[in-house]
Image (cartoon, rainbow, N blue to C red; front, top):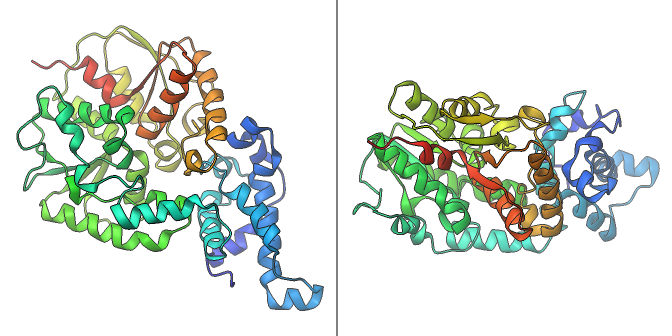
Length: 396
């Protein structure tokens, strides 16, 4: 197997690693498991060894052999037990683009047939149903029927100015479906001209990167772009940071795109969203893909602070240093216990603020933290920012 999954820049960046081990000190998987073998620096060392063993001259000079099946398995176990939170990249003193490197490494492991079996399930689900959960794609907008007064058109119109791209998690998981319900009702109160794509929305492609099966991405991206074109829309908005980041980094720049927090901040500034007083003490969790990934830090905080009666308390680690909730990188499918252990540390940090609710801006963060809170009977509200807005919204 050649080193085809890595760019020339990535191959050069690997040599810049100084083995400083700072990445291990902040890695959520390492801190939760107390296993240094899950760190970026350990992963980098294994990757370098494998890449060099593939190089013809290196093999001749040092009698190196191709990695054994056991070596591949060992590397795979650390690579896929990573949330792809990007904190190692954020803190790297020499500026290595580590998150992108881990995505390429996952592709390499898939091409080298050294990956967890659940990756085959993810691929099969996407190919069969166009969503990562293997649900009927015709039921993507079925959550609309669970609303108190669903409109006859189900928010699916032939044409609209704005497309709300819902995402797989919010479409199918009851824990997360309250997010699109709240968002749709907010847009309706503001008389926004928006539509859903319904069954014509396919997975954004983010789970493909996390699973090392990026080869599926082009078909899905082209389908989604065409579905938006057919609506005549000029703008696409997302409540899911991962969907937003995919469109921002991997889709052609054909439409204006915004995360919901940015879109709502604009509506607030235009007086289209007005609030009643809401007495709550809250803290805010920066989703990895929205914060470190897309650098959207201010919009969510400005939205929260615009609600009268809210007392806002920052987490000890916030903005670009915010700690992952444990829900990213397909980790929940690969190692559910590790995901829960990371969530435990996150909730402990939240509770230390004295807040009655943790607000975030990501459906997967809501799902991961809510699951942990409920299982452990912790008296803490977990809310998406759309739910907070909806709760404080003046509807007259």
